[in-house]
Length: 186
Image 1 (cartoon, rainbow, N blue to C red):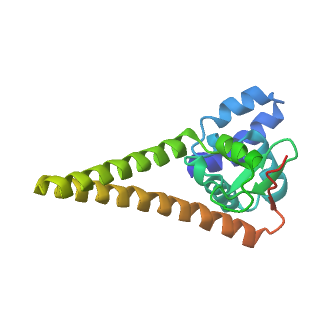
Image 2 (image 1 turned 45 degrees about the horizontal axis):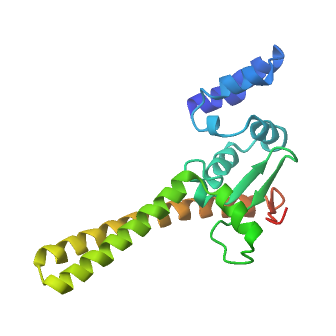
């Protein structure tokens, strides 16, 4: 928090005073924890409109799912300087065009987690079938372990998703005009 505050209060002012170009400003931003994952235009937008609320900036960081983009609820559009609401798990209107957009929006991390879960379910099913066929206790134990691992991974995904949802709801409740609805049909 000390580095974030120093950057927002001191460093940004120094960079503006010496008319630093955007490349230099982005390089300095990369040294700031958490903020380095945000776009420079986001921080400029925050500073111009909401500079008295540091917690909002951190909530936006969380709501964008910086470390888990497959769970994000808020997307920054630097072209029109707006935040848009997006629910990657919405089952509404899954047209072909939207499915393609959803694939692009989900990070490789989210896709790999889903792939691991599918593989674990497949292995669990195979172990269960083997345990029924051979009646061996080792297959029952392996089946139980795989099911336990699946439950732990799924619980972690739900927990991280809930953190993102909470941050998004907090932003929407506090600043209802800040986040707009996202239309995926572009």
